[in-house]
Picture 1 (cartoon, rainbow, N blue to C red):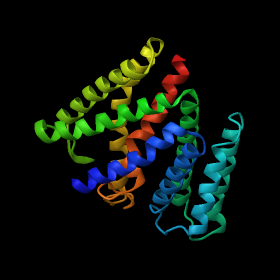
Picture 2: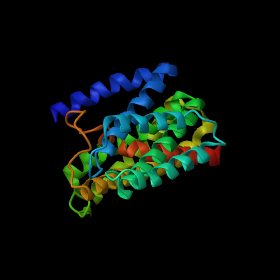
Picture 3: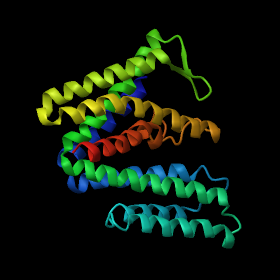
Picture 4: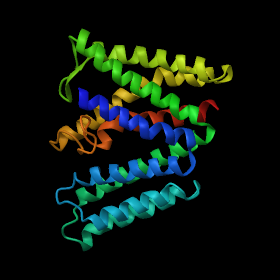
Length: 254
């Protein structure tokens, strides 16, 4: 527990300045998460990808974050065709590897673009998502530990409980409203209300979804970069889902 808390303090010490100062700091944070997340996903392949291939995938994703939105689908489509064709020419790169690469390339480009669009509206929106996500995550753990009796989804995550899930949603919602009251204006209430309702739900689904991936590939964690937490994907699984969720709400409401 001590290691987990110290690691979280270190994470906040990096993330908060990036949110405050933005610019190259925020872009660097996005690139770091995409790069490390891509490396962690690449290890799911039956035959580990060469580092040069992983770097190429990271560069393709990085380019996808900055090309015009009206051609991003065509750009991803070309990458898909190349990945689908690669097993024809490379015996060690299987169709299964193609689909692994296709999934995380599209996902990271989508999330990266969502982050840029959200942050362009103001750092407080990104902070709101983080507050909703990790207040839910923290109180789901605490409520589950002290009050949990009924399993939420034992097949995927044996330790998570229904009581913990409900507690996480309640506190995620309340902390979202508290953040709105302290740092946002009245015109943003409807968006905050919707995100306060939806983000704690989607965040927990994201957590379970990534747990299902780990169970499918029989791994405990995606990596070991963050002591007490595992890899980058183990720490941001809920956040990635909530970024896309909030991006959708933002596009509908604003």
